Length: 248
Image 1: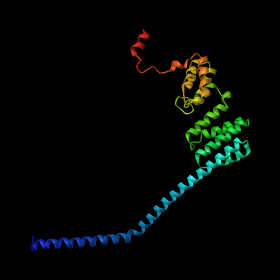
Image 2: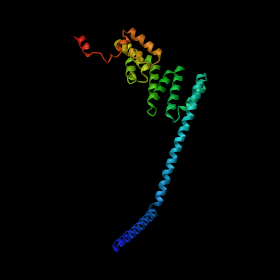
Image 3: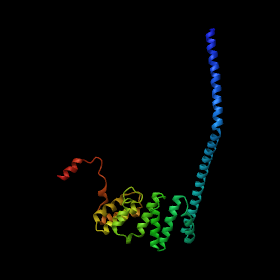
C-alpha cells in the first residue's frame, strides 16, 4: 500500500527524532564520562583490588591453617613418643596462633601436660583461661571446663561443681557423660542419693557414651536403688486410663 504525503512526513519526523535522541544520549554519555569517568575507574580499581585482596587473605588463612594442623600433629606425635619438652615447644607456638581451633587445642594440651607434671594450680589457671576466652569455639571452652573441674574436683565444694557443670550435665550435650558423672557424685557427697541415682541411670542409657562409663554408671545407679529399665519411656500405646486407675 502506497504511503500518503502525511505518512511520509510522519516517518521522516520519527527518524529525525530518533537521530536527535541518539545524539542527545551520546552527548549525555560523553559529558557524564568526562565528569565521572575518572572516579568510576578508580572505584572499579578499588573494588577489584579489594576482591583480589580478599581471595589472597582466604588463601593465606587456608595455608596457615594447614601449616598449624601439621604442627599440631607433629606435636602430638612427639608427646606420644615421650618427647614432652619438644612437644611443649611446638604447642607453645600453636597456642599463640590466629586459628582459634588449633590455638584452643594447643592450650588445652599444654594444660594437660602441666596437670600431669603435678602443677595443679597452674593447670587450673590455664584451663580457666581457655574457658573465659570468648574468641575460642564453645566446644573447646566446654572441654576446658570439664578438664578444669576434673583436676580440682576433690577440692571444690559439691554445690560449686553442680552449679558449674549444670549447662553441660544434660542428656544430649556432648559432655554429658563426664559432667553428669561429676554432678551425680557431688550429689552423693551432699547426701542427695535420690538426685544422683537418676543421673547415673541416664548416663547408663546413653548409647553414644563409652561403654566403660555406662557400665560404671549402671552399677552406681543400681547401688543407689535405681533400675535403669524403670526410666524407659512408656510405649506409645499405653493407656492413660491405666495410669488413672493406679491413682485411685
